[in-house]
Image 1 (cartoon, rainbow, N blue to C red):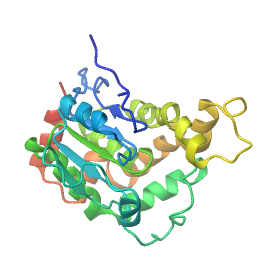
Image 2 (tube, one colour):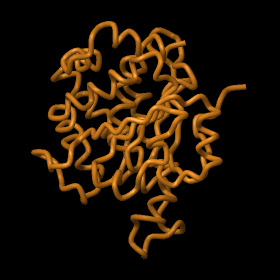
Image 3 (cartoon, rainbow, N blue to C red):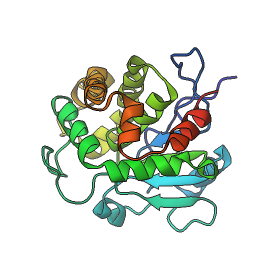
Length: 249
């Protein structure tokens, strides 16, 4: 029986396994290796146990300092997993991006993600280097919603594994299915309800696959592809191979 793409973890949104995706060489990505998620600050003890039982050894928190301080990760200080706070985009606004309080919406995704890829290379390298360590896996990494910062790390991992761009974009867009409830609970204006705002509307507004395809085109044009980007930011051939070997069945 094939494992589930979405992990139904109480207290967290958008928890998804990167396994089971096709690669360009006819293979599949391995389950229970890399898991993406939204923030883990609300996990009750049972959900923490569920993730540990799933095999999680490492938790990487990509959020900004104030996000971590306001909503501490439940695994910080854990004796059962290794927790890393790796602030992917830093605490100061980056050139060419919106403020920290502004949502990353469809029309701004290519420019903002492109800026992160250009300006946050040491931080992105640190996260990929951590995931390249065999002892770190299985690993879960997350930001606040599991869509933007997490989406970039996921795209890079899947690209290193040789997953086609269209499939990477589909994985990115899948966040709409699992973030709609969070949108209503925490972000949406009162006039939006499940009756007048759907998963398709959320995907159009916040995570359309075409936006990720534009980001991948940018990586191809500027860095010669995802593996070229990984080399540019300082990942060694051994680290790139470690990620690929871990993620491809």
